[in-house]
Length: 271
Image (cartoon, rainbow, N blue to C red; front, side, top):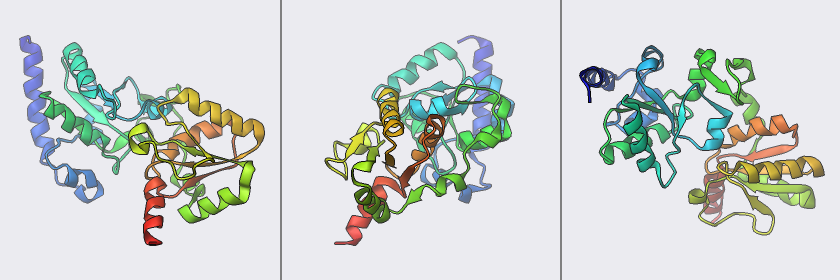
């Protein structure tokens, strides 16, 4: 490592120490309590340091392709090769690495840093405000559906998303009511699903990591005018699918509130 790069690493390490001690707004970032040893960087600080770091998206490929920080690299933290992929990246870039995910309640950025540190990799940090806050504040440094700068007005609001949610019981009842006029879609990844679905014989599985398979089901729903009933693990991932549904012109669809976790909680309450 040459003197310039070494100096940069030392400088950035001191920077990490200073921001790691920040206590402001801790209540707004539950991950900072859950991962107290993970260094974090704030929105304004990342913008100031953007040319001095490598930004890495720890989410799924699908989420990355939908909305991302401009010039970010995608290394899904759920990948079996994550640690090796990160080591390969570090060997190439000679810059500190900043991970991000969806927002303040998404823990993937912390988990990515934790995995990297455990693998012996240094100079890793989490930008935990997430891609939405970044995109609203810096639309010229964000990419939405392949286009940049973005129009922040095209970011789907939480209120718009909320209107599509049904509680697990209502969600299940509507599937029965619609009968053959419905398509049930489980978009959890293979680790979350573990081979188990909730609507045997009725549902299809297409994770957000399998874009080709996912689009096949969306196209079928549009062509057959069937209602889509979609669920994920905890009700967080479906927001990304909403962009694809809008792009495909699909208007008749519902999401399960709190996802598979909400369904399991419902079953437990009935015991």
